[in-house]
Structure formats: structure tokens, C-alpha cells
Length: 334
Ligand code: NAD
Ligand code: DAU
Image 1: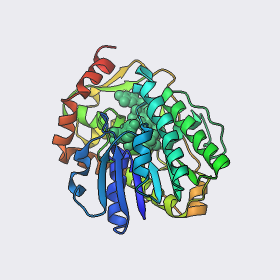
Image 2: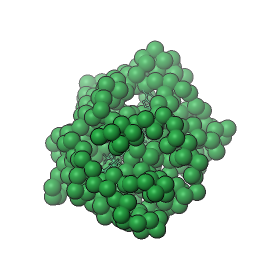
Image 3: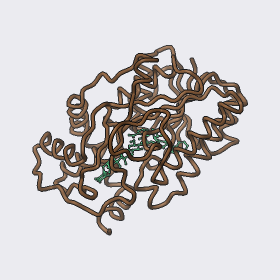
């Protein structure tokens, strides 16, 4: 099977490439990535020369480029490529519209023209908005609250429309918050770990009682594998870890694991329109495709902490580069 993976140099995409090459040595994977600030070829260094793996630098929103690439013939597209950080979408939504909406439409159009067998849109639980009690099902109303989640919702609706209008075999997955190796240190867990290791304050938005459901990135990759092989065109699958935690609970646990003082916690101004709670009902993927998470939260958290402890040069080179300007603007000047 020939797969085009987009955004494979980012957090989840690079974990997926590692996972897929190990689990399916017969798959041929082309990784198309623009290498934005979040894309990092270091994430793929160990497999860069592996047979069956190819890297192409390019933009999913560049129609000519995508048309030419798809002409090489693929069976499946797995679309991870996106601007993925909510806070950045609040500072400037434009790249989110360009990549998450226009880029997805260009990929869908290419998949239609070249009659690809399957299009997997890697979406998010954030499209449903916030829920105080209960859980969102795949039928729940879409109610995004940030420019990031609005752009992901638009992409989901385009996938739906291409399935309805052109019978394009698109499948949407909506996953909760991932944790694991190679996550860019602007996101909560790697930010807390790396700040704590540097004895820097750990910023907590608002009262810290917002709830996220955490899933180990490898479990997300396992779910995508099942969807690629057994998912039904036109369907949506929720993917969750069944590990709801308040941000404060999570941060306190991380500081404990790192043997760092709780006094590093610093409450800062809340994120505008900060979703209070995400929670998914994942019965559909469990009953129809037989997937459930394999890793406990404790195991996932300690594996993640260990990875950042062992890969200090990876995160230090990010934190000392271009990212330091964003960090200054986000946390030190507000
Ligand atoms: P990330 O920001 O770590 O990686 C995104 C990757 O996409 C980077 O390698 C970047 O260079 C690439 N990219 C960006 N714009 C591109 C473009 N125009 N053309 C080609 N490549 C481009 O993101 P992530 O956290 O790995 O998320 C991957 C996907 O999973 C996203 O679609 C995101 O919405 C979704 N998702 C993420 C989570 C999570 O917890 N991180 C949860 C659910 C869904
Ligand atoms: O739910 C899936 C989504 O999870 C994905 O679609 C997004 O791509 C991904 O970035 C993530 O979004 P969140 O906004 O939930 O993740 P983030 O790591 O930015 O924040 C997690 C929680 O922690 C959120 O409630 C905001 C809070 N937070 C975050 C940061 C960066 C803090 O309190 N302090 C911080 O410094």
C-alpha cells in the first residue's frame, strides 16, 4: 500500500511514520511536510534512510505541487498537516485558514482527480466545543470556539461535502489531547516538563480547572491504523483516552514526577474563549472497529517524561531558536 502522509515531521505525524514503518514493513510512505516552525526532520532522523520511506518538502496549499505529487499514484492520504496551536490562532488566524482549510480542500480535490482509495482527515475533539457534563458523540453539534478549531471544523465539513457530492472515500477521525515524544514545547505537557527542568515558572491559564482527556500518541496511531484498514468511507470516528484530568492535577503530577517544587506554578491570564472541558464517547470505534486504548495514563505520562529527560538536546535546540520569540511574546510580555 502506498501512503501519502502529510505533516509527518510534526508531533503526531512523526510518531505515526515510526509506528507504520514498524508495524507495516510492506507499506511505502511518502511524507509531505512544509517544515513550518513545528516540523522537524530531527524527529525522523533514525528512519530517514529506511527503505519504503521518502520525504518531500512542500505545501499542501500549493495546488500545482500537490497535483504533481499525487500523479505519482497513492492508495491513501493521511492528512496530519495543520497549524495546530490554539494560542497561535488567537494571535493570527491567517495561516490556519490557508493550511487547515485551503490545504485540505486542495488535497481532497487531488484525491478526487486521482481516484485515491481512501482519505483520512486527522481532526480533533475541539470541533465540538466545550461540554460541562456527558460526552460528545460523532452526531453532536459542531460548535468550535477558537480560530484553530473553526478551521478544523471547516476542513471536516469539506471532507463531508466531498464524500456526499463526489463519493470521495473520506473518513474523519476526531481525537482528544495527545501526549508523547516529539511534541513541540509550546503545548502544555512539554512546556511544563521543559520549563520545570530549567527551573522556570510553569504558566497555568485561568484557574487551572479546565479538563482535557489525554491519550498516548501511540494509541492514536493504533486507532488511525485500524481506521485506514477497516474504517467506512463517509464515517466519523471519535478517538479518546478516557483519562480526564484538570490542568492543575496534570501539572502537579508532572512536577512530582520531575521532583520539582509545586511553587513553580504561576497562574496567568486565561486564554480567551478557553474551552472548559472536552470529553468524547468512543463507543463507535470500539464496537465497529475493535479499537480501544492500550496504554494507561500513568504509563504514558512516565514514558513521556522519560523521553524529554533523555532527549534534552532535542528540546533545548527548539527552545533556544525562533520559538524563544514566540515564548517571550506569549508569556513574558502579556
Ligand atoms: P504539529 O503542529 O506538531 O505538526 C504539524 C505538522 O504539519 C508540522 O510538521 C508542519 O510542518 C506541517 N505543516 C503545517 N502546515 C503545512 C502545510 N501547509 N503543508 C505541509 N505541511 C504543513 O501538529 P500535531 O500536534 O502533530 O497535530 C497533527 C494533526 O493532528 C493536526 O491536524 C491536528 O489538528 C490533529 N490533532 C492534534 C491533537 C494533539 O493533541 N496534538 C489532537 C487531535 C488532533
Ligand atoms: O483536544 C485536541 C487538541 O489538543 C488539538 O486539536 C490541538 O492541536 C492541541 O494543541 C491540543 O489543544 P489544547 O488547547 O487542549 O492544548 P494545549 O497544550 O495548548 O493546552 C492544554 C490545556 O492547558 C488547555 O486547557 C490550556 C492549558 N494551558 C496551556 C498552555 C500552553 C495552560 O494552562 N498553560 C499553558 O502554558
